[in-house]
Length: 349
Image (cartoon, rainbow, N blue to C red; front, side, top):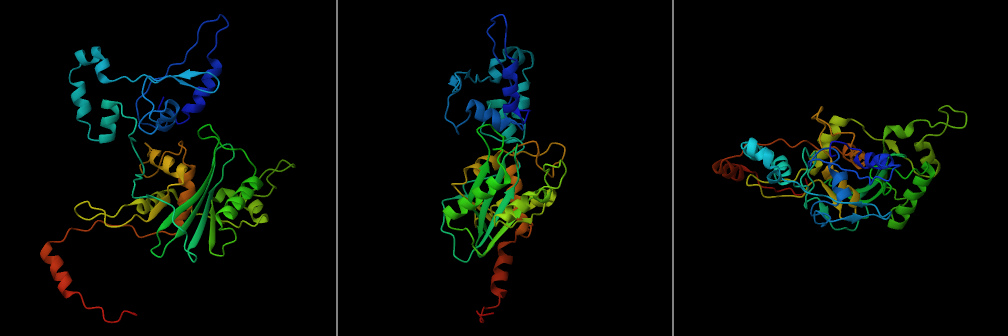
């Protein structure tokens, strides 16, 4: 099941084929291992792992009276395999990737195999008041059948970005959009900025995907209709195209998430991207993204990556220098650097 990024939609379609005109009791069975592009959807569907706190073999009943249950299976349950191939368990233990080893050996659903980004407690903070003169950013990734994503950011004096508000346009079905018009999206953006007190701030920069400047079909059947950007502009929201470069943006995104540490592994500073703990969709989605198996320089685009695409407009608008690992200096060299450092006499300069 986890090999399909559209697991939930596939299950919904299979329900329509699970029928019998002769009264045979119909059931659906699925098997799979943790990991893969459908990992998060399977985890949510069966409420697996410590995130949901539902014990395995618990019957879950939905609003329509349909039931589902997760039955865990471990290596010890497969006695024929263990007896005929006694070295298999040793081969599993020899896997170097700790996430893959834990998933296949322990059936751990709280690990992310091929994880593209690591989000830790260092990135998630409680809401802070926005400084009066701080630059603000509003980033947007369009979607209709798929979810759209809007994020709001502010920047401190060290160029550190803070995601303080978001609006993820998805329905109760994973990776399904709200199917609302551009005017309704624009009205929702204005309403949320009014409620937060940032509407019509002079230092607001708005960025959106280049597809927002594509003409839309109108009643004539062609591409003469107004684009999303034109519709937004008519309501007072003026966006500029963001940089869509996929290789560059994944590098910048990782650089922003990088947690500075010293040679002993101790954290010495905050990462350059911080997220308010109220931005639940960002916190839940970003850690579940995995790398593309065919392109190690990009993420798997079949996943629910809309928030990532939207957030990358911010990191590409304010690129930061790539950190290069430096050779560790000897203690004697560090003492020499300290002694030879010239005294600071002119603070003004």
